[in-house]
Structures are given as C-alpha cells and as structure tokens.
Image (cartoon, rainbow, N blue to C red):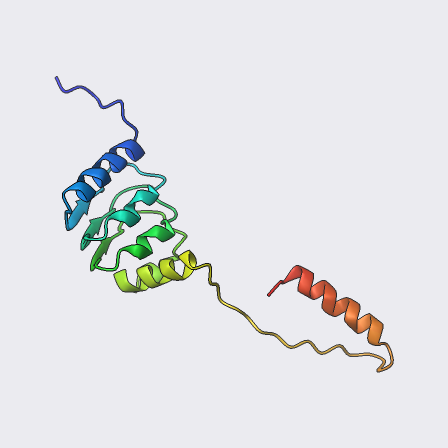
Length: 140
C-alpha cells in the first residue's frame, strides 16, 4: 500500500523547482498539487520554457514569474486566479508575463482626472481643501 506524503503542496513544489534548477530543465509540471501559494524560487528557473500550473488553488502568481524570459507556455487552467486578472490570463502567456514584470518593477497604471469645482470664484481655500482631500483618497 502506498504511503501518503507528509509534505505540503508547497514543499513538493519547492523540491521540484530545486531539481529543475539543478538540471536546467526546460519544462516543469506543478499541476494537481493543490497549491494555494506559489514559491518565489520559480524566478530562478531561467531555462524554463514550459510551466504547468493547471488544477491548483492559486489566486495569485508571484511577480518573480516575470523573470522567466524564455517561458513560452504557461498553463493556468482551473485556478481561481484574481491576480493577474482573468482578462490578462485569457490573453496568453506573454500577456501574463508582461503583467507580472510590471508588478515586479513596482509600476502601476496611472489614472488622470480633472476636477471642476462649481461655486463662488473667490473661495480658493475651499477648492484647495477639496483637492487635498481627493488626493488623500486617491493618491497618484
């Protein structure tokens, strides 16, 4: 009778990542492990071309995946991902990697808005207070 592993899904993933790094594998299968978190060590697998993460419980991917410049195939089916958003995932591997690289670099989209305060023209202080409050609520 087969003995059930005492290792967590994350430990199994870390072991597989270590082996793939040591032998410079170009493919890695981490599917069906029940992963809820993903080891950041994945960013060290610079020779990786294919990565299968299907059928886990991942809600987010580490930005370190963006370091995998040779990656051509990223399998993410059957994961409840929210970051990257589903619309990015639907665009394919390169879109996901670009999204993760932007996140890794700390960049984020900037939204610009114009504010028109209607009222008495002589009440400059009131307009400054409103503008300051909006900047506190929605920092750039």
